[in-house]
Image (cartoon, rainbow, N blue to C red; front, side, top):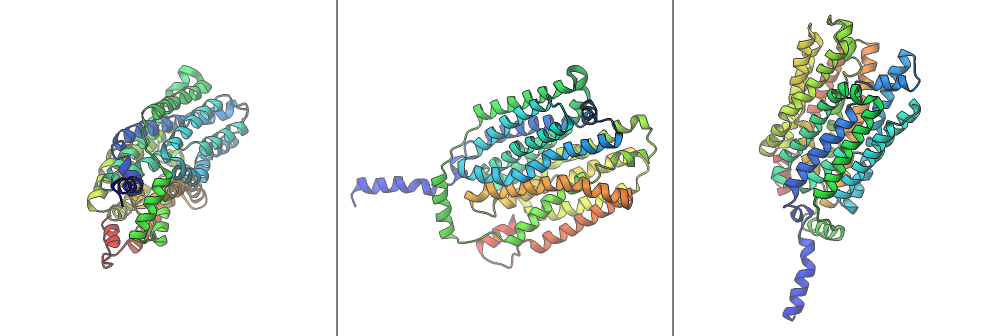
Length: 431
């Protein structure tokens, strides 16, 4: 073979030897920063309607108190339902067309829909637009796909923990902003402000996020890796991780329908119920904000499976005394501790899910992970409300704690055993 032909052959074969993560190794830190900012901004905009959502429902013509509560719950959950439905689709498209286009699509779509919510004429339009926001949005979900596929394996837990911190901060700040912003710009104006905030995130994403994406090259690399080490993801372990992801949000949201009533039973005056309930809700996000990045880094050091099992047991343990509090501040402290223990779960789960599948399928699989999480966010309040209404408020905590402990047992059973002496088994056991 001539030198020229030999050189050409090397050049043509080279793209198949470079993975997506290797091509984007120089961008992942900057992209992480933009994704944190975008996730924070979009979740502030989505969650800031919580304090005034019932008021907006009333403004749209609903007068019955029970109907206001019902429509508010439907409108709030519609976004999460929409995201749960479409997250796998967007993840699949991210594998095919790149991660950045999915970020841009989510940001622009959410900016437009958020502004349209401010022009709703009926509660049906409000619910429909909230559902549309979930169907076309999902910036935080798309961020997990990008960060999870670009960050180096040894830093993936830390990176996903930092990303989770940005999302948690958005959920914490959003209701606080929504508490005073309507007094300045009105309820409808608040949605326009939220749309403008997401538009800024869209502009930052378009201008600053960098990605080198080549679907053909990634497919060649995946085929070469599959030929070298023909392994398939263990479906049992994957199912355990998806169930755990759903349980994280289910446990965190199960108290939402009963929290105001529960605090009222602790002797808080009616005029202060809403404020105290907001503080207690925020304490969980505050606790998670403090430990998410640290627990993500811990997963990189001691193994993600160890962090998942430990966090599930610790969260279940902290859940039990919440049923025995006698003062609202005791509940707030325990919810903060619960937030600290539960924060390590999602980064560790995303790390394992990302590294258990081939690179060219990572977006689709992480999309299923997001779908599981948002399913828990929808199912959690439903379960908590039914148990609280039919059995008792205290039993919500007992049932949730039991489910978390059972989930810890499921993960202990599903985790890889180090007795399997293949390199892949040892690697997965260490993660």
